[in-house]
Length: 56
Image 1 (cartoon, rainbow, N blue to C red):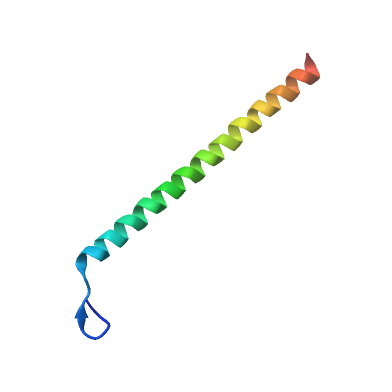
Image 2 (tube, rainbow, N blue to C red):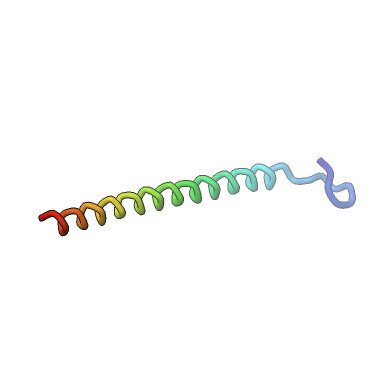
């Protein structure tokens, strides 16, 4: 775990970087899943509206 000119790499920054990366990945995946669900539900509502307009 040496970096640069033989200086020890700080262990806390490695943990913090990994933790931040996991948090960011979790948030991005959560936003992506909710966006897909939002699009599907609004598309279903639009389809129901079209069917209602055409048949009633």
